[in-house]
Length: 411
Image (tube, rainbow, N blue to C red; front, top):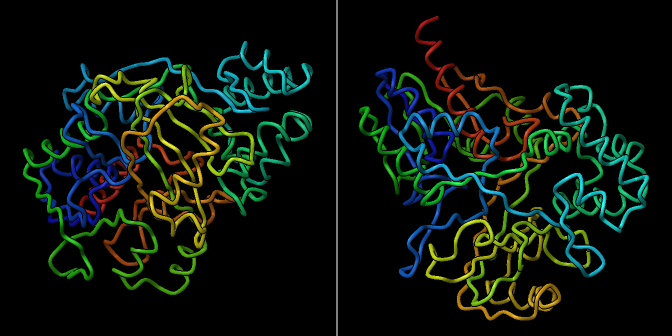
């Protein structure tokens, strides 16, 4: 059996590893020079470690990626850290990641802070997300938490991330963010690029073939026993002729672009916080992630690294701006956070189809692994629900896709 995997992101690589481990012949095709997809990295001559183009970490309950890393012999490369998450409100930063810091937050009346804490605790122990998929986040969290909590915390964050879709986001998506979060975060020594590198080497050691810089525009299905598409759905429909109803289903899922402006500075933008949610919607970005408040700056030539993050719908004007134009727009707002830094270098990365929009009843629209075309499978971010776009679920999805392909060979 010979399997073609289109896309060398984490999902495609996890599938390739699982298949080659079972002795299956696999060829992975990746259009870019580097593997890893959204988890791919880059580096400058002064850095010892590569850096992800979009901010990455994993949670300590992310079983799939942790188990795979250990299987690959990377147990010593797993770093468990305790960075701080804060919210930006009323021109100040407030830690907002423990019950105590939530109770101390002055932007919400104390009774509503208690309601928030009780709601979060309930969501952490409630594994039943399906009923929440029928309702929007507002329909569930506004009555549970009160107007102040909704207006100050949840609504600004949903509006910042989903923009025109914010009012339609399913409560199950927000449940997933609360259910999965852990006090500690994980990272790989050497970055996620190191994880991708070790995974790719294991695939090749098991006989798999990986072809980078290889854009696929047409697939000769006769050459392969099965094809796994791990590319975005809107790319997949250009490679395979699917039935019209199935194509319409794939096209019915809206997506957002991910845009990160990465700053290399002499001093940190954020003194103590790793992740700062911008709850002030006058700011033109949704988060500042001070990577070197989680990972030692000495791995990056002693310089401080911060991501300025956004999710943007098609046609958003920021998508047409150069790095210099975007920085000019952001700089007055960054100076409000911290005026004492100098930019030494900057990088801009923009990725389409990075965030599927989880509206109500999303699971009825999300594509299954098997497509209507025999022996053609689809596994991408659209199939990850109710969770958000996490590398852990990319691993899990790739493993499930491999098992599905193996089941067709052994019905």
